[in-house]
Image (cartoon, rainbow, N blue to C red; front, side, top):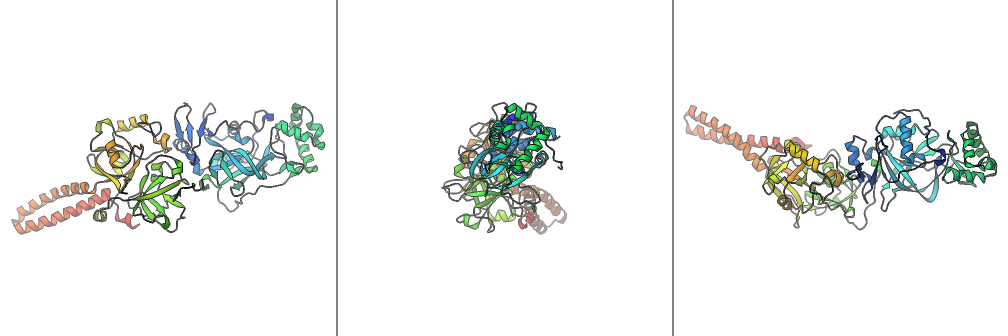
Amino acid sequence: MDLAKAPIESDLDPLAYPWSPPRDNGLMVPTNDHGYLPMTIMTGRRLGKARLLMSDGYHTKGLSSYLAAHAQTPMRGRHVVLAVGSNASPEVMRNKFRRRGFNTPLTLPFVRCRVSNLAVGYMPFVAPRGYVPATPIHAPGEQTVLWASWFDDDQLAALDSTEPGYSCTRLASADYPLVVDMPGGEPITSYYVYEADSGVIEIGGEPTRLGSQQDFYQTMAQVPQFADEFGRPTSEVLEWLKIPEHQDEFVARLAEAGLIGRRRLKGVDESDSPSRVTYSSSLGFVAPENIENAMRIQPTRDDIERNGENCILVHPSRATGFGSHAVLRPAPNLRLGRPGVLGKLIVSPDIDPDEIEVDQLLRDGLGLDLQEWVTIEPATVPDDPLADALVGRRYATVRVQAAEHSHGETDLTLLHPVIMTYLGLSDGDHVVYEGMPGPDGKVGVAQMRVGMIPEDVLLRREALSEGGLDALYASPESALGVYPDLPMVLMDSATRTKLNLGPHRLAAVRVRPSRRHKLLAEVREATLVMAVAVLGLVTISNSVVVAIISAVLISLLAIGVGLLRVRSAIGTSRKAERN
């Protein structure tokens, strides 16, 4: 978006500049009644996992879930901008974007933050409506509470176009630490602020700190060169400043009196950067204290040999005593009370020892975000080398929901249609579920028959799912902040116990087709076809020897065909294993 810079004036009272910030952290949403959804930030969690209170005053949704459901740019793709003046006011932002002709729905998070080594002063400039605007200033040792917003690319370009006289300066936490203003608030590694090109007003050699316009008038009234103009009643000073000639005169006299400072913030040079830094570059929280083996989540690389399994990658120093699989759990400091997810463990020496790469399906299984902290523990998965060599494995990770009353306490589970298709399953097939390790480290396993969840059941579950982890039909979006969620499996309590899931709702388990069941079915079908062929040969040749040899060959061929069909339907391809 390429827009020429031009000021956008507000209709609000100029004496009330910088106008009202939000009452609470929240999300500005595009509704006719100036919608603003209050937001509760979760201790120790990334901002994407914050909880939004919906307009009905009852339901809640995760911030990232809400953005995804409304086709908005996710948090990781947004740019953090610290507001030092009126950009902290949702009303001002709506006005700016509306008058700028920005027609895209304006969905914008506002979060109260605390910044160090930075304060706010006055820009040596008078806006057309007579107020003196703000600018950030370098202030070693000071802390200031300000509001930050998360803009997508088009929103930031539109905002840039409303800020003539300002430069969008990138700051780093090394110089100006920024954290969400709450106990244990999330640190923001890199962000932007609009800094006045013309400097800052200084009285007595120090930048004048931002207050109300009346405060500024009183300060200027103490300066001999401006005592006459600013010593008058507030309304008269404002009217004087509204006159364009007086605005130019005021700035010129500030310069003559040596009251304009040229200090600049310690900005980060972005001249060689093809794009502006996003929230995804923020490292989030530091390692939790007193928790051994915690690692920070990163996305997995593209060239992993998954072989049909979701994967976890760690440095060799983190894999001592581990086998081929591990259970991933949220770091205890998050206090999430979730059972963990099972994944294939891959060791890679080029990973930072303090980081762990985790497939997205496993992150969604726990409701965790990138840069959050996790631990791993060993898990022993039943091994069958011969079956693995002949057929391979193909897993899916699914969300466990309570069974329907119609099939509770039976050996039947109902699986989402997408997973039935992906795993090559039909109603009545057998599948193997793998859950969590027991005290001996062995993963709980259950072999069950499977059926496809009927469409009416899917619709009913969608309508009933709400509330947190204590609800009967807990909502993954409300309880875990995951949208869209993993495909579901409907499973009774006895099966959940067999999988070592305990009382936890919304656990994530792995499922794969039963290779033995599938192979027997395929061989049986192929054998019937071959038997007909054998009978034909016996009839034609009238030779017992020919018939026996033909039967043996046809049986071997039936087994081979069965293996090929099973591998094609439910296993891992040879190509996938090589890549």
